[in-house]
Length: 227
Picture 1 (tube, rainbow, N blue to C red):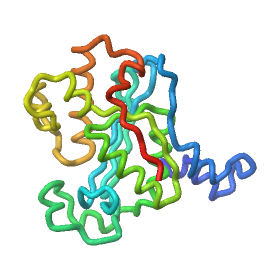
Picture 2 (cartoon, rainbow, N blue to C red):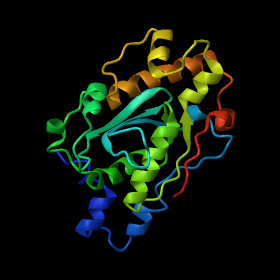
Picture 3 (spheres, rainbow, N blue to C red):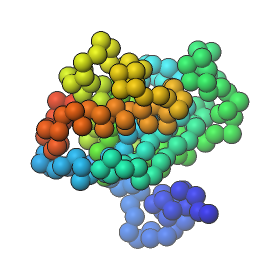
């Protein structure tokens, strides 16, 4: 079975397939993004809910140790992207306590430069969604900048949505899971957090059917800084 890398534009470039048509600057630069008209219906667009687990909370210095993303269309799952990532350094002791990820699990994991272009291919052309998207977008921006990849995605933050729309005291993912009677497959692991974020999103959309076009989500948009 062919790997995602074998089918990627990046692999075609390196192997010489379609060399006359593929510009490496386009792949690693301006193509990495998603823009849509304000009147587009969210239900008509592919969305990717994504989550990064990292070595710390300082987005300028933290490194990604896990990437997770699930692509949906009109609430139905289409495909997943998930990989551990070797950060090129030993993990801080507190990382295992939070994520359950340790150095042994990352020993044979790919490095970020070997997989981040695949994540960009996965999310390109989709509306991004993340809980506390400010953190994930900042991590994505800094890791992309280190690799020379520009990125400018349309991202909706479910934390911003919850702060405006959900009547519960706290708005973190644990509190929202309790509010909506959801359980985690695994907490502080990318796919587990994404699955709960998806259910929180569907619940908020059901409660607020007036949220239809991207312009309706403008208050919950997370701008991506360009470094």
